[in-house]
Length: 112
Image (tube, rainbow, N blue to C red; front, side, top):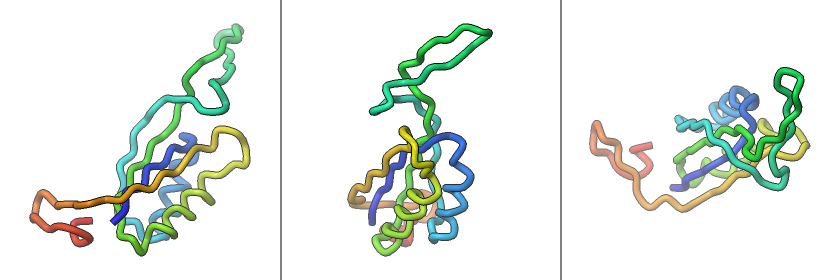
């Protein structure tokens, strides 16, 4: 099993979710986050005044999936979230040692 964590632009959430569903991903956790990378924040205009924010709003996706689905899930995220501009985000893949479904006690891939 693997754990995928992806940071994407907020307006790309629906297209990424649809792409992941087509790739066979059964579920995910979505969190609104703020951060910065190479883009170092952004300039915005509020009531005619321009100001710079250090933290950019992003969406963090957390997905637990079987090993055989990982490549399709990563490809789905990359193709659906990409705009070919700075700040598109990152995808991280971690090993997932164990998963347990609370309701039934199922473990491993069956818990996903």
